[in-house]
Amino acid sequence: MSIKTVELHLLQSFPPSCVNRDGNNSPKDCIFGDVRRARISSQCLKRAIRQAESFSETLGEETANRSKQMRDRKLIPYLLSQGLNQEDAEEAADAFRKELAKDDKKPAQTSVGLYFGDKELFALLDAHRSGDPKWKQKGARKSADVALFGRMLAEATDLSVDAASQVAHAISTHRLSQEMDYWTAADDLKSVAEEDAGAGMLGTSEFNASIFYRYQCVSLPILRSNLNDDELVKKTVEAFLVASFEAIPTGKLNGHAHFTPPYLALAVVREKGMPLNLCNAFLKPAKATKDEALDENSASKLLEHLAASRKMAPVDRATYILAHQLPMAYSNDSVTVAEGYGGLVEKVVSLL
Image (cartoon, rainbow, N blue to C red):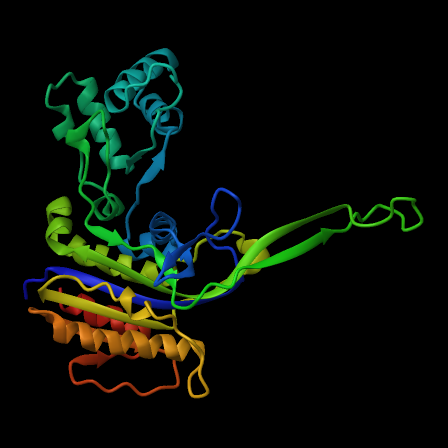
């Protein structure tokens, strides 16, 4: 089977939380369907996916680091381990760094975050030190997460990598209800008899409780081109799917403990036809009714829109796999219902 894309649709309910903050320390939001919605940025979700423990565990190999501190944290320690003294290691690291991100004003770091796995980075460094004019072509295989999420280097465009994945901003399926928390922190050593007795600190913070629709897609041709290894392509897609379930953004996590994974997942293994983002299912916001709770109504709207979108699409050669934990029975001859999210992942990987 020649696979074009693997797509994933998720519904995820968060309790009172602030999973992704804007510049004012408030939960991110947006207008969609002419009403205000809660929002989680795509960058936040991508980081949560690649930082999930299950991502590297499923891959069984190293993942990359994105940092401005590559000189001191990676390059110099590696050069010292190869027998160079401190002065020569710093000189070699600086020469290499300037080829990747030209910025003489910050010798200790690059002006942009570099995104490399250790094997690729050190192979490039060794080739650069050898004086090979084609050193940029001597890197080891890219890390799986670099192949998925891409890399852009303005000063070294031949080391840029086209992203194989696309991740949408998540939006709430319903109208946003932003709320304010007034909090106080007691001073444990202050006596209640003191003249200024009261809270040691106080403040306010915003939060909301929302059900989010998440959508993401992986291009198999681009992923194969980036990795050039069919077995690793399968492992990377599997890791992407598994980690997506565990991708909980960490914004104010200690204060809200929002460990609530998706309750519905729809995977699509597409042979032909364009990917389908189903966000328009929620142009008219979901609402709780006497027959359906908000999570159920969101699911109903998503699946109804899926059926309508497939009828509208001129080409839709794909396998649809559904998993959910709702008290509902879903019957559709063209959608396979899996036993839980693990069963969904297994079915997707078996088709690659």
